[in-house]
Length: 213
Image (tube, rainbow, N blue to C red):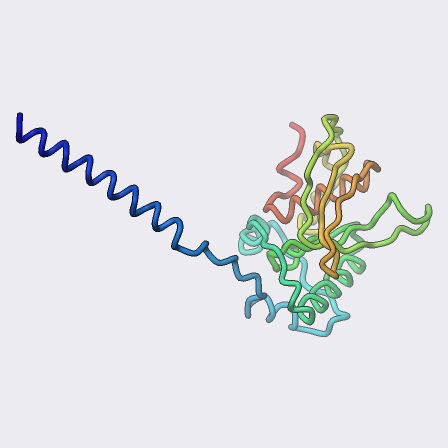
């Protein structure tokens, strides 16, 4: 009996000591450092592979190596590296304009960063709609109502006209190139669709994941 009591006492003391040690560790160990968002050498090699007014190759989901990149979760961008950021966003814009798309995400060009270009069909005139650049965008709310909409993608050539489920409006948050953070309600269905499609790319999702049966 005495032997068991000694064992129980030892276990009790050990537990108390461990908890105090963990408590001390939590108060003295500095929090983990913020992830380094600097562009990698591999990313810079792609970005600076040609002049800033030239296109980048659009990845093809049906090529296995490309699909691995398109399925990756993207990271936020480094606002400090303005040279790389300017080069990349400019080449993204040239690429989407020359391809005839209405939006593009950085992963489609081999860069897993949270950057998208969107043509704003809810702005401008019937014949001219402005393009806008968004950094670190995310959708904070989807409409309860969804609709089947014809979809297509520059990274899935030949797979067009299929219907995917999309919210009819969304709330989005994003950073502008100058670092300003903004929130916006996108009520126009087609523009909301484009935002959903491009932000899906940043999460490793392609539109065929949302096809109706």
